[in-house]
Length: 94
Image 1 (tube, one colour):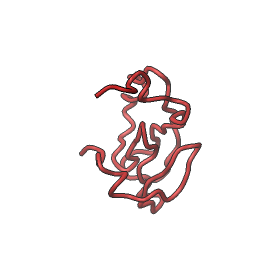
Image 2 (cartoon, rainbow, N blue to C red):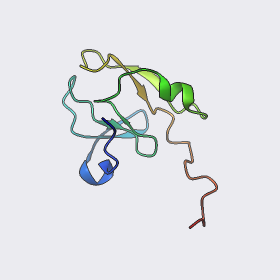
Image 3 (cartoon, rainbow, N blue to C red):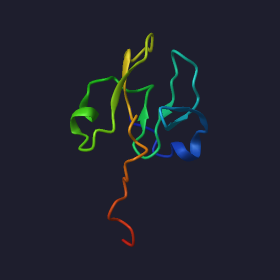
Image 4 (cartoon, one colour):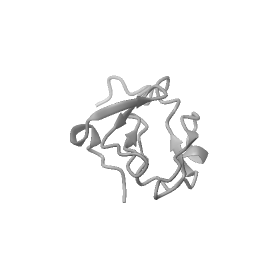
């Protein structure tokens, strides 16, 4: 299962965590929502295999504990999303 690519239209911001938005629904510990906007992670489907941490060239992610979550008890949190310009160099491109 992949992240909902339309989550900004289909979900509401319900919280803020370490400088990034959390998109609901959130019902801890089973449902933790989507963390981040530009570099978003669906905590409810994240299996904590570390691939995003290894592949990210700008160190956006940090591990956070998510005790009792059914998929994994740690998640890759986009804790450093705010200072990252994900569209750098794209201004004016069609």
